[in-house]
Length: 108
Image (tube, rainbow, N blue to C red):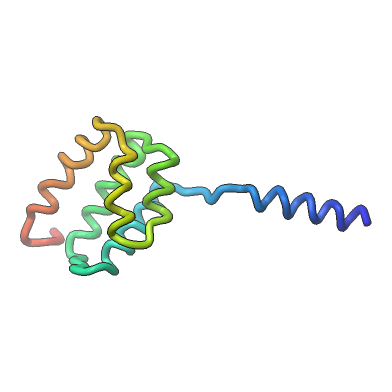
């Protein structure tokens, strides 16, 4: 009986745990989701991913941002994630992403 109670306690404790998101896993999910949606241009993905991970770490993106990108399932959801960044974080990210997105050559 004691083992059963312990097992139920552990299972109940784990059920309340939130999914942990890192910069790498969250941004990787965002890139994969974005690539799966039309128009699905993957040529810039490695550079976009690298820039986003770098900013995520350097600018200390919050758990809400990581959860948004990590749990996204479509472009509509992805589009809302940037709203969770501060204005300063958004500006820094967009400053680095703008030249990548404007580069018609794609990957270096």
